[in-house]
Amino acid sequence: MAFDASNSYDPDGRVTGYAWDFNNDGRTDARGVTAIHGFPAAGSYRVRLTVTDNLGLTDSITRVVQVSGPANRPPVPSFSFSPYYPMVGQPVVLNAGSSYDPDGWITDFQWDFDSNGTIDAWGSQVTHAFYRPGSHPVTLTVRDNRGASASITHTVTVQGYGPPTPSAAGFYVNIEPGNIVHITVQGNSSWWFDHPYRIDLETDGSFLNVSQQTSGGVSPLGIVPTPAPQKTLSLSGNVRAGKVDYYIRLSDDTTKIKFKLQLDRDGDGDLDLRTDNVYLGPSMSHPRSNPFVLNFPSGTLSWAQAQMCIVLIDQPGFRFIVCFNFNP
Image 1 (cartoon, one colour):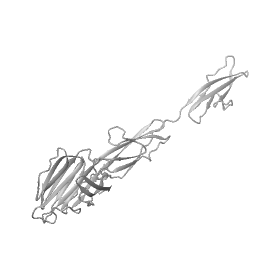
Image 2: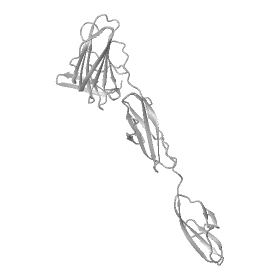
Image 3: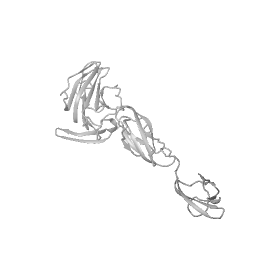
Image 4: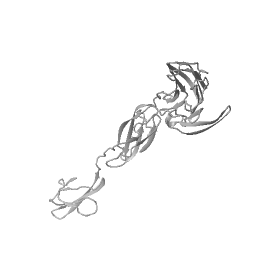
């Protein structure tokens, strides 16, 4: 910083000396009509100039100098997430620990998971699940200790649980977006005569509607009862070489669905209640009992949130089940 005392004067003589005190300690830090001085930090400093004339008389003046710090540099946002390709409903951990501020520190981390401009979460590390497949822009905004902010957006690509590809005869159960249970009844290319099947479902929510698609040799019967809405649902028919797909939509308050799936697989005319007739989710794993219950404690119907419940006792008015985490 430059200091200039050339406007100083003596009314009856001349100024012969200039003494500068830059830190108000009573000591001379520089001499001369001009001076250059740098202050160590931002703040207020009292600077005193003392002038002396040709007769040895002195006088002083003090000015307060306000020193500002360097311009604030904005923070640098950065984040990673895991897993990189999450499934629908799978928890995603988002970590902004790599964000930094070049001349201060970060005081706030704000997350927008749905690109609507509303803050959905705060913190350097958060967890979020997406319940629709596709691309989801996630925006992180960070703010530093001096109020500057900056944002960055990454796209999280969420994979859907596609319907299984039926091959062996049996029931294929899948969960799809929109609270839809998709059940495929698959026949066998060697079946030249009818093999009966029956699907019995119960829920603590409601069955809202059912649609069906058929291909090949299959003859589904009517839906009993027709959902309007209902707590129970029965579907039955006969299958040969073809298949029938049922799309069953449930209410938002659904947390449990009981399945009882029967198929005449050996062609003797009797409905068989077997676990190896049933294929669950993308992995096509078998349940451990038939009937069985799928439990969704979070209230969201997705495989990532599902628990498998073994039905040990299934009597009118009394049912005993044991549940465990399940990720097909």
